[in-house]
Image 1 (cartoon, rainbow, N blue to C red):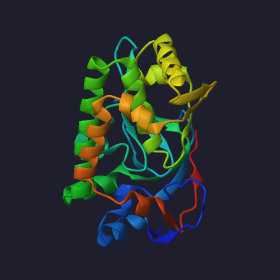
Image 2 (cartoon, helix red, strand yellow):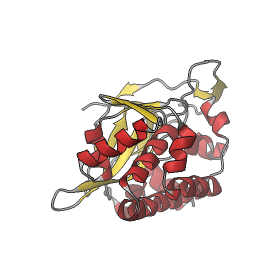
Image 3 (cartoon, rainbow, N blue to C red):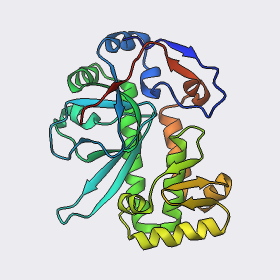
Image 4 (spheres, rainbow, N blue to C red):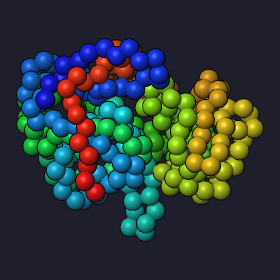
Amino acid sequence: MSLSLAATTSTAPREPRVNALLVQMPPEDQARWSSQLETVELLKGRVLFEAGSPATHVYFPITAIVSLIHTTRSGASAQVAMIGSEGAVGLAAAMGGESAACRAVVQRAGLAYRVRVGLVREEFSRGAPMLLRYVHSLLTQTAHTALCNRHHSLERQLCRWLLSCLDRQHGHNELSVTQELISSLLGVRREGVTESAQRLQGAGLIRYSRGHIAVLDRPGLEARACDCYALLKLDFQRLLPQDPDGVNAATSATFAPVAVQA
């Protein structure tokens, strides 16, 4: 399958039609990967892999968003990272770990490319500077998330989380998500999320209805978010500079979606 790109002329909110990591690979690397990539449809709530279990594929989201979730022995859990079209899911298994460190769950349904772990492992043996820089950025995201969850108010955490979701939805300002899911991902009580969402809605920053959150004032939301959000964006651009408009305007010319079996 080819990674060749063609422009789109749609006037609707732009969705990425490619994965940023794959697009930025050198042509010779793309050529090695092209015949082994497949396009898959990821359904919301699907578990791509469990922590500690062998991972067979690495996923490169296109329009899907995936949450990495760590769960304690007592059953408490929290999201430690969020991955969209800027990154890849399952790289730890390709770096010698064999199994995944966290549970990977589809947060937003959509498309992704996937490739067998063995091919990614071979890429790391060649150096894979692009993938290594992304791993660095993912570790940074995990560290900031841990710091944020421990030291910042729930309202500021919620603002950061909403903004991070918006960044991975590329132009869409409405999220299909319940307060119960948000509380689970942030590792907090649902009542706390409800109170924070009500304050943001009262300030005119969001509009909440059952299962949907529309962001009405993004600059206002950014002003209320903790500094983790801005710092993570700066770090990502430093490690993996890209032209978001160029990535979002591109589309795969030859990939056909294949449904992932439950």
